[in-house]
Length: 118
Image (cartoon, rainbow, N blue to C red; front, side):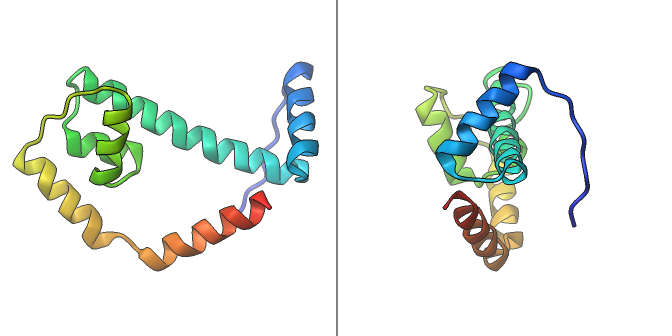
């Protein structure tokens, strides 16, 4: 379900959005939803990396914060030169994540995202 959200943006940011809109051939609302989605994903990952790097959360909890499975978070840590530290609890978090992961829902979501990019 969607909800209407009104925001005010600086003129220079609106210009950037309009430029991207032309490049990607998207209507403004779709583009803003896409940008928000990408930004949220990026910020979740950035937050998880910082929390894990500063030893505030476990590896498993960091992957939850990032919204990715353990394998993807391993890749993220590798890309950011972050050493890995695992515990049994981390392994259990990964197992729990995989057990409740809805592959059909994920496939539908990815198809929607790809469709919106075209």
